[in-house]
Length: 199
Image 1 (cartoon, rainbow, N blue to C red):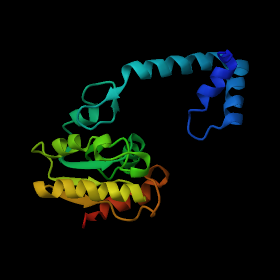
Image 2 (image 1 turned 180 degrees about the vertical axis):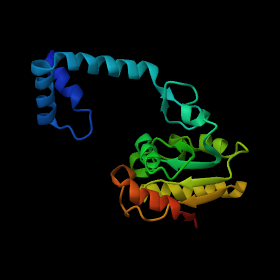
Image 3 (image 1 turned 180 degrees about the horizontal axis):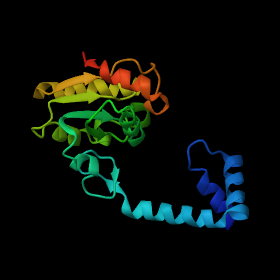
Image 4 (image 1 turned 30 degrees about the horizontal axis):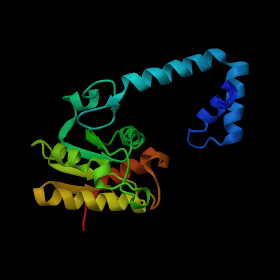
C-alpha cells in the first residue's frame, strides 16, 4: 500500500540532515497549514536545481555552467589550487577573503568504513587538474578528521612524484573539527600559516 501524501511528505523531509521523525512531521504540517506558497516555491526550487545544476568540469563544485564563474575568472591566481571536501568548505574558505586561487572540490573524503576510496572520489580527475601546466601549488584544506587526514596523505603521495608542490592548511582549525563550523578568522589564520605536507 502506498503512503498517503502527508506520510510521503514527512518521509521525504527526513532525508535532510538533522531532521528526525518529529521535526519532519512539524515541517510538513507547517508547510501544509501555514505556508502552501512556500511549499510550492520549495518544490519548484528543488526541481529546478535537480535539472539545472551539475558539476563544474574544472573544480567539480555545483554549477549551472560547464565551467563555473570562479574557474573562468582571470582575477583568480591559477597557480594555486585549494582542495576541499565539500562546496560548503569552499564557501568558508572564500569568506576568509585570504585566498584568491582556484579550488577542487572532492565531494567527499576517503573513508574505507563507508566504502569510499580514491576511485569513488575520482582522484584521477584531481591529478589531471593539478597537472594542467598552470598549477604550481596544491593546498590541502581537507578537514582535520581521521578521514580528512587520510585523504590529505593519499593526495600528497599521488602528487609528489609529479613535482607539484603540496601544502596543508595549518592546524588553526581544531583537530576533529570541520571547516563548516570554524569561524572565518581562524580559517584565515590557518590558510596563512599553511606548511608543506610531510609524509
